Image 1: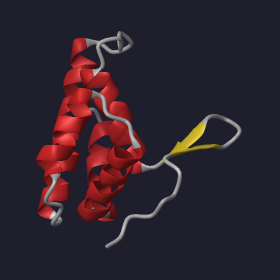
Image 2 (image 1 turned 180 degrees about the horizontal axis):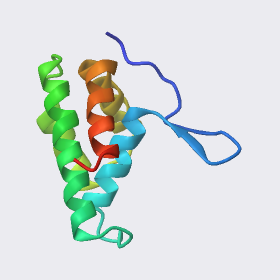
Image 3 (image 1 turned 30 degrees about the horizontal axis):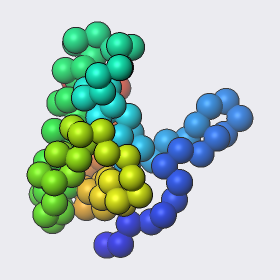
Image 4 (image 1 turned 90 degrees about the vertical axis):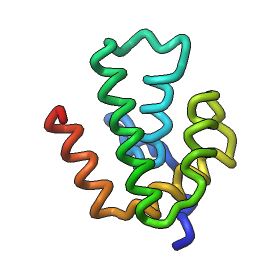
Amino acid sequence: MKPTTTPLFTPNGDGYDIQPAGVLLILADTVYSEDCNDSTPAGQGRAARMIDSILAAARAGGYTQTDILHTLLVRGERSKRIQDMARAACAAAGNDRMKVIFDAMRKGK
């Protein structure tokens, strides 16, 4: 399945609509960015577990570049390449699995 080029962040008047790949990038900033002091250690742990869940779902869905994607996330890469890779990973994970992951996050799991 070819990922769409839908913008990752779209203003909606009250904030932004964020695509799953955009959430993945925000989570990576929460965990790996040196200047991200907005999250507690517990919040960073939850974000790291969610990244792991998304990448595991992508791998299960046939995405073969999860190790490369993870490395680029750790390095803070935010090029078009990483955005496309994040889109492809989330597409491979599939909407149903992404919903399960997001629901678990909302419930604090």
